[in-house]
Image (cartoon, rainbow, N blue to C red; front, side, top):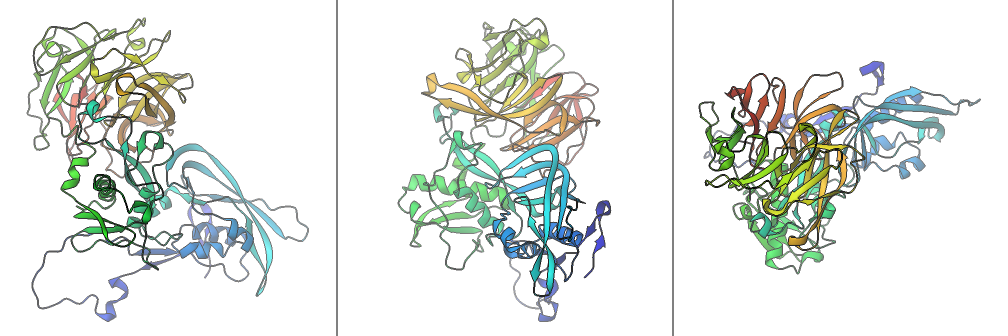
Length: 627
């Protein structure tokens, strides 16, 4: 088969798409309609693998170097077991050394450029692969955003074949090199779940440690390397443990070395007709107690819920001999739910024109624009403290407010009246922008940044009541100043807006705690960029277990609202309609609740799911959900 002209003037070798299922079985009666029998309700089950397959074309006899290069690039996007077709473009030695586990993602795919070497006999070619690198996926399936140029080479040589000498690739970069569109077609993001370490139940008020989402990417269809479907890939990824970035602050209840023990020849796990899944484990897990086993099952169940979007009936863990280790039903798993300690908030909050903290009903069933805001009880709602920024504890019993001049932070009850207290934190910065940031609560503690350039500090108040203690930022800040912060409910991740050389960017840090709870040494480590493609980030809010909503703009672009995963990948959530001149955005962990934002043109606005932005207060500022 010949080649065809593709995007950017490149020659592309066609690939074959195979559709499996009824479309290919019409003559065998697959599409026939039964004319008798009872009507039965069928539960939608996650049946593992998509029915679409893409296969590359093997190199034709006498293929020229450009065809070999293009054919190999196309074959990397296919589903052939063990990437068999792609390997046909390589020499035996290169095929043996090539490991397609890692993935490099380019915005518009790799562009090959002929750089033929000076070879008198024409026995070698070199092609440069160039493009704009946007991400890397490592052997742990972890995604890392990148904003840099890409330049690698493919080296071709002529080797003896059954039909004479043929061009083959003998030098190439490791891993797959995919365009962003192919990557999104082939892979999908899924959250694995682990338990937060160093966050006690006393601090958060939860019955169990927080469960923390750890996003990774799995193939939507069968993995060519392992022949596993996406369900089994995800379970295997969970059992392998947390990704390196999250590992210091979370733990797994699965004993080290726990792995799947599938029957000989079996490659996939399967849900039964009740949406229940049996998971056979090796002998590393055979002797765990019931409490620990239930925790293991909870990790699996929440991971699979994120993957399938179906209601999982139950998870049954099995010993290496096939006997039942424990069973956890979907309803029982709610005790472990990641958002159980914060729940769905009762109210939405903002500052009115008198700089008072006011609230509106935050029900998922009442998201119209007909509610009237009322001041909260206590000094933050009475007007005795005029505020510029605010944060409400997840219990909705206390709030923290920054004074109008940003010099002082106050913490007070919002369920009962009381006398104004002395400030919990003060700043000596010369101007408002050099003083205190807006505060943020995790599952129990209060955080705020002092932006005084003469002595910048990141501060934490344990329980929102203890003396403020400075948090050390170990690495990744590189002289930049913290402008704003949002801490995750689980208390192990912090989103920071940092400014350097006049540019404000978004970074995510890991919160590590060492020592006893009442004397814990807390630090923020390993800051990593989350939106390197954005020239400027204006505001950020947590929007669920591993998702952020971000306000910013790309270079030369206009302001936009966007969902991002905590690994920096673009969420598959629906795009966010733009609002005018947004300065602040707020989201709840419950995605049924509307986004809140402050617009310089429209005031306090709200975006119910599936609707457009609506103004709820023509004047006001600092809209927040608890957190």
